[in-house]
Length: 120
Image (cartoon, rainbow, N blue to C red):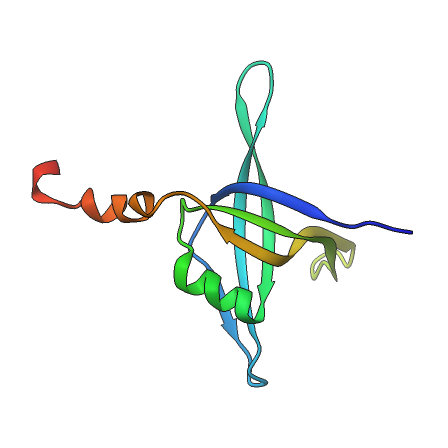
């Protein structure tokens, strides 16, 4: 028996990077900052996320930089050969199966309210 399940809660580091394929498939890439508590400070760990299909479309519509989300998925490694050195490289990626939008509606609208004339 083997288990490869990852659960993360954090804040999105940038707006979704969407890619639409001729086959009709949709892919979304995100970065997620998850605070790791240490004795001296909270240091974020950064994770690369990959979402496909309907989950990717939802992320493209509702997720923006700074939004708090929870994800469930599995760990995979993207591998490639470095063009300059020919060395084999790899990067960990979380392949997301489930996406939950966290935070209140007010959190989402807060950035719009900050643009009001009273704040200038």
